[in-house]
Image (cartoon, rainbow, N blue to C red; front, side):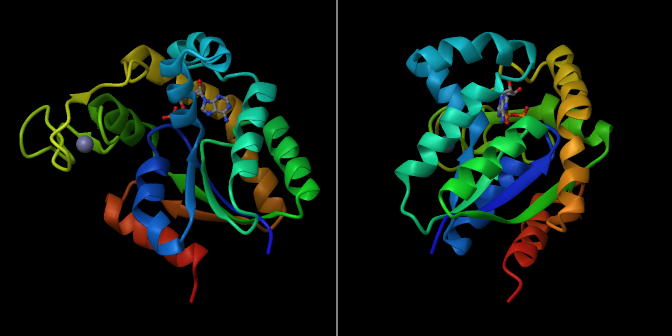
Length: 218
Ligand code: ADP
Ligand code: ZN
């Protein structure tokens, strides 16, 4: 058995991270979020983190070579037969090609690409209202998924914060970057017969169920 990949593809706010967290255990999959990996690198002050910080603050993409190194290192840490839920990667056609090369070298493959599709106004609403637990990373939303106590995580009691790139101006830029650099991947993976589209404007639980049924049909 070799590495198998499920790519979660979609704009910022489309629910990639939330969905991955909801379904990873039952799939026996490892959730790889490149955004989370970069934020950890920024926190730790590594050279990669220092390079990524400025890009992320502006809502620009981190250079492809940096991203591929990051993902490749992580794939090599796991067991050979691991199933990965890739969230936030690939994000450019160059990254898609580099991922292909990296998988071919390891005898791995992409099992499915799930495109989480939602209109721009839904994405903006989700991102502007998003709050995240500092301790356990759980996601909330000021109106859609409010915590029982304002500013406090239901799961662990940790403090909720707003990501620095979840401000209106940076959100608009991230959505534009997605439209110009990432949305081409929809075509690319459709042509390869790997893409399934889901309506990600539905509730988080229903979305997770639909994605799970696509990637694990039995
Ligand atoms: P979102 O999808 O909501 O923008 P992420 O946490 O996935 O949030 O990504 C946050 C930021 O991290 C991006 O705006 C970008 O700067 C950087 N990033 C994450 N993944 C990649 C990637 N594959 N290539 C380049 N930059 C990335
Ligand atoms: Zn928490």
